[in-house]
Image (tube, rainbow, N blue to C red; front, side, top):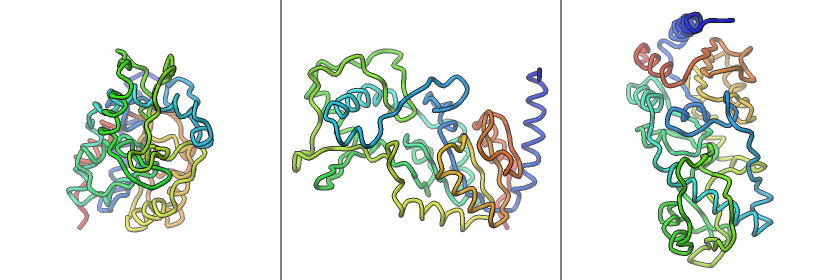
Length: 283
């Protein structure tokens, strides 16, 4: 069995190799749920992550009962989700961009923590929990305002302690009885969070924006993603075809470890900070 000291030594050696591969290059960064675990938001597939069955877009759009269950659970998780703060890894990526080392961040996360950490160019592939929109008239609402409406319409809702939060800010409610589903205040249409549900496609223009960021960079760093979602693999392939260095930072295996120039099996916060400390701005 590998000891902790041996694991740390391997990670340190891999970081040294990554710095050598990335030095002098402009980086595109792709992040997954593992980047936010140090902010208290759990991973989908990391070690110890519970098995979850997220709601599909078909379920949400076709069933009032499913929407009621979603909005109850989403609201119960929102307070804890919104209270999460950017961690060292988020701040390190913002610093890399500010120093001209990173071109920007492409993220599969919907928590908005990269924006709050100070990253300026952020491509949110799967959308954001900050916004809600009407599927009928297109009106957009701030999630904080919607939360106030939900509580006003459902004063019996209590935020439980130690809520089992999901990576998407959702929890499984014990009951949905009597819950009033929020509706558009403009046309009374169906509201949907501005996120990509399971079974839903990433908007083409959003993926093109991500591709453009990779195309304008000299290397790709993937942090906190097991690359199970195909969008991440597609972006990795864009970099691989251009023979760009690819560094993967993730605890545990990913679908593309064999394609990486360097794989670092360690926590994202400390590794991203080490890269931010070591990498000089491109000439």
